[in-house]
Length: 173
Image 1: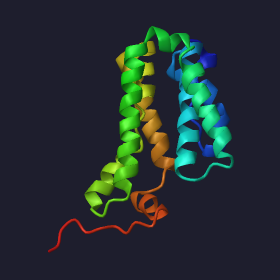
Image 2: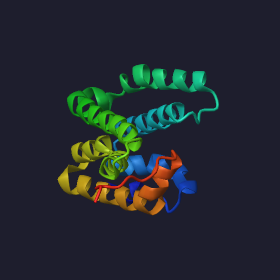
Image 3: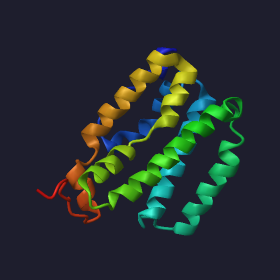
Image 4: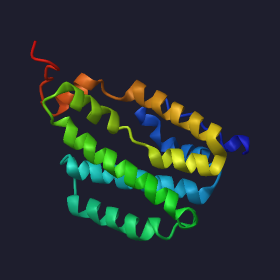
């Protein structure tokens, strides 16, 4: 991998225009794999905005989600060469996203904690990194992503408070 493909994770959310280079880094310079990651990230962001009622134009966002899913992903050569692994990782991420939303509204603090952890599902990034660069590369990437996310992400209390669900006691003692 050349030095031009080495990009550190952004220091703040304002620097996320660096994402295309980050995707190339995760994919060890494989443009098709990086394009797949970018497509998946856009789909996830738009879908989350729709579910959270944060979309400015739900119809346009849903049209883009559907187009990227049915055309963008299925025409991507990296996806087609690694279909089984990518579908499996994506399925795990979708299940985690669904559980995160479900457990977020629970009354039990332990269940809310599961939801909080599950919202960080990034299986597709790890699988792409593993396919492109092997175990050590994937391990390094996931640690960097989690390190970045822990600096910018809300705390458990902030995340729960966003949807006005009070923290529940773990026991009735």
